[in-house]
Amino acid sequence: MNLVIVDLGCGNIGSVRLAFGRFGLEPLVTRDAEQIASADKIILPGVGAAGFAMERIVALGLHPTLTSLRQPALGICLGMQLLFDASDEEDTACLGVIGGRVRALEAARGRPVPHMGWTQVQVRDPDLGLVDGDYLYFAHSFACDAGPAAVATATYGRKIAAAVRHGNWLGAQFHPERSGEAGARFLESFLR
Image (tube, rainbow, N blue to C red; front, side):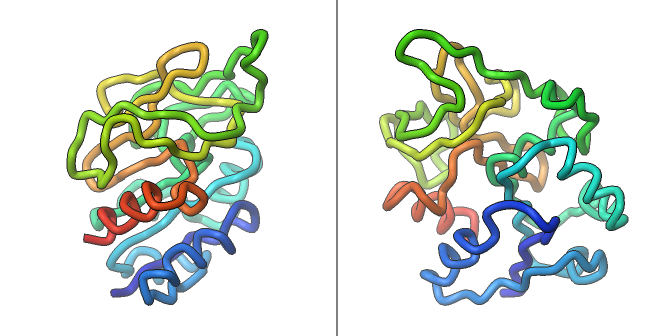
């Protein structure tokens, strides 16, 4: 399998690469549009700021490549957020693959922002490799509401999309590479 991790010069590339290595895969890390477009499966990792990530996507000429992919692709954390129309973070226009806006989480007593830690999810799609009540690891300050594309949700002050599916794209707001056995099931399901 030709698995590609998109290299935007930021993010959690190392941990994502290691997670797929546990399945015996050696993903190619690249920012080359042709290599991305010809891959069997693509990972758009995340950690960082939406504005910077979108600037990198545009500067590298990857916007048309990412929005025209037809093969299975997975956005992780910020990589998932970039799939939406826009983000409140730096008022950033994103890829527009999925309708909706990523909004800031609101801090409250006992609910700090960023949201960092293990949170239970409710699963709408049995093909995710997840089950209701799985605990997954989150690390984020922005999230999309649980709209029509949400296939798993979590609650952190409001109901948020923990995972989304739209066409060939799958997105995870949580970090599957840091979510133990449940995260491994999720990645294995994506690979199938």
